[in-house]
Image: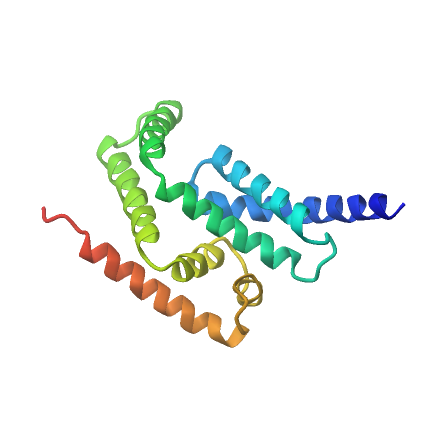
Amino acid sequence: METIGAEDAFERLFRCEYARVTAIAQRIVRSPDEAEDVAQEAFVQFHRHHPPDAPYAAAWLYRAAVHGALNVVRGKGRRDRRESAQAWEGACRAGPLDPLALVEANELQHEVRAALARISPKSAAVLALRYSGLSYAEVAAALGVGINQVGTLLKRAEDALRKEMRHHETPS
């Protein structure tokens, strides 16, 4: 009977957190399919090694989503080709758009993701978590830091991202 209760608890955890874990991953990888893969892997790893009713479950899953998604970004060759194809497909479905604006937006997204992959994992994680809609308290729990540190970490991460973006700008 104990196993059934644990499975029910895990199912509740999954239902409660899956959308948010997927959204965090998608914020980084920008591909719904890859985000779902990252989320599923996070849940599988959690299920194998942790009790489903652990008080740190949500935080652990958020952190796993960030790290898994960043690993996907770091192995980016395949993703770059797919993003370009998706951007053009989206433009075709949406009707006439400014092709230059579309290319510039796609390039900026690529540059931001590449810069995220170059800054420290903790900085990338705090940015991904906060800009995925998590509160300071949720970011703090996911990163294992005090809530009073999140603002400082976020500011430093934003500065590091800006610096990294400027450092890799191509002269026009």
